[in-house]
Image 1 (tube, rainbow, N blue to C red):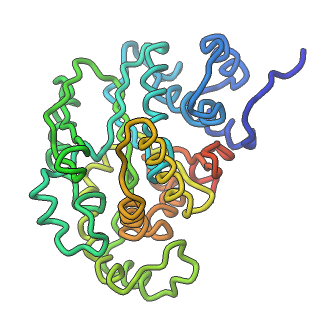
Image 2: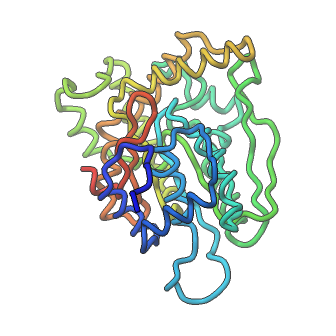
Image 3: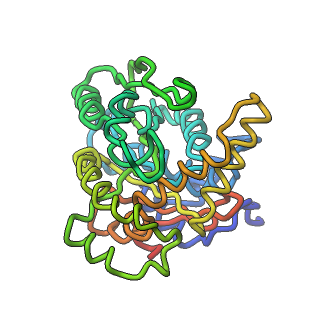
Length: 333
């Protein structure tokens, strides 16, 4: 019997270790079961992301055979950290579509749905070096999101704010609420999900080092604002401590998010006739890459995996957003 054709190109051994961490004891039986369940599946996303991220994540949400006791697990909060343009929205749609086949009631939301109302964001971000009204740490209503999660974990229906970026001429504003009657798993996605504040001393040491190896060296003004972003990030830590898992999407180069986002805006322009200008896209992407420089905040998440129960997996993406590596986060360092 010949081995099945596998339309992906990531190394098998780290992937098997990830599956074991997700409760899969027999990866070959797991693969065959999913092939039968999926039938003639067609993306998007690319099949490598189906097998490298989506299906392992769903499997990690199931009760393990030796978990003891019957019934459902308590509500689970999974973080999905990835840069802008990485395809988190597409991945979220596929997670929601496939979850019911496993009996999972799963919802994917963006942390950006918890943006502060417009006027409060303007006050928080006044004078920022990017000229943006959202994106950097401090843009979100973390206390509100924590209260929503507290009520959900206590057994109430999940109720979350909704953000509409089309309002106020593209500045965006809060646009009502969404209510979900029954949710087992909530996936919270965003570019800064899980990022930990460095603290004053560690940040001062990092800022004293040469930026030559940074993917996006900071201007003097951006560097001056970095301590403020780090202080703002401290307010997110109570949210990250609630994560039951953290999945990391990582580009092979940190120059890719801008290209990906420009491609997405071009598609948006072709389909609807409306899209951000290239300069606006560049400002928003730069806000993510220099308010929390990846070398200080993103890359370190994988190294913290063995110490933090929240860090689970790392998925590395090539320039076409295909998975070229899938495994436990600490194996990638």
